[in-house]
Length: 225
Picture (cartoon, rainbow, N blue to C red):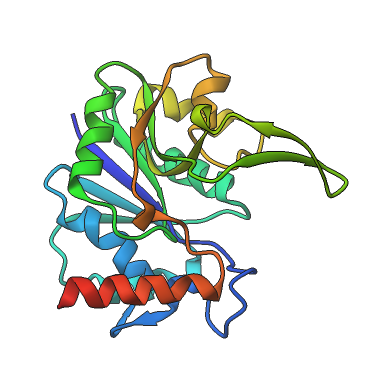
């Protein structure tokens, strides 16, 4: 059994509003993407990594990671996040087996810990899929035409994060899914499979806008102290 991490790095960063895409934003001499990839490079649980990116960026990532010893595959991304996942899973058809564990991770989420990776892997003892998530602390309301129409029970809600973990025999079917899903874990529910919730961490919140970078810079500097 192998444990393979797919890292999605092909986004266009339209909401980031900066001169470079967010995955290339420099923090202490390294791009944001490096801090997303590094936990999987360092993890004792991950055997191989599949980086999904734009064709023109492959040489950049190969140079960035040339000294890393873990096996890294490169796959060209699609026009959407969902299509990029499918491209990676289609590539895995060449060598993955049904019992392999596949982790799919957004390249705009940093600071995943090895304990969180292990917790996701352990969750697959009792299910075919699991995702990191954090509980909602704020009140959550439903709106219609800018009017709040109801409050939701936040004790029954979580904010989904990545990585998300799957047995390959389940997630390989995503290749034939016609819907453009916002994340991959939804596919488990579409297949009527149990999807487990594993405690995530606020540090893994997704970088979306330039304002999110301040917290990332602080976290990187704190780790380097």
